[in-house]
Length: 318
Image 1 (spheres, rainbow, N blue to C red):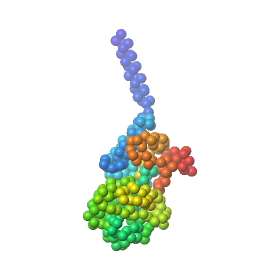
Image 2: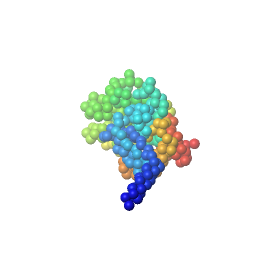
Image 3: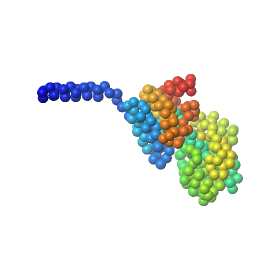
Image 4: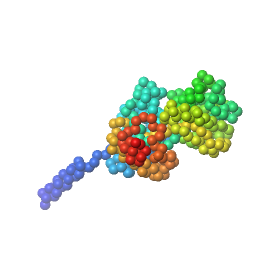
């Protein structure tokens, strides 16, 4: 009896080993996001949960990071397989410009744009600033040094025929700009973010603002020279006292990967993302802004073949 039991047990162990050996291996991926207090981290967590629950043997882990610049470097070094990044930053990384000057990341690839991050130009009603050209001779904050905001401000001034030499420039973060504006140390500042922006909302609780529109010719010049920009309209009523629509441009929060990632895996990631958009929208408010028809716009670097395959099936690519 004991001998028979030992034989049965041995057979069961052998079968278990066979099944284990035959079981498909899990695909483990790191999704680089941003700081835990920002938008990228919870949005990435919501995406990871969808990928893990909908794709067999998928294990995506959302990782907190320093956001776009760090994320591009993590993809380049294959220390992350997925990342949320601004589309202008992946353009700079791929081409070795701005923050990546002298350090091209040529293996970075686009998957899809997720939602817009809008260039917002705030001015004091007392400053006389109604368009970008009016900033000549004014005190203007253009964002933290080396930031995406600062690059966007410089690009807009270039399209308008201005340089930093034409004004009194400060390099301040969102919160620093808001404080300087309230203390009347600056007359205008730039923000690139989703809307409504908390720093601007904080200002409008006690202070009046003007949101500066870009002219059609400036928008056309920007989108032609910098293909990562898309035209955007900030709806009236987004901020207290904003009575009319404001024309501007936006960069796009983008899901990116690298060329080492499997075509089949990225195809499944892309397909699952768009087929489960309603679930993403329930998990995070920004998920409501994920639009299939817009997902290929604003990506100026090569797409990953897996993403291309999906978009071709949907008639969005030739």
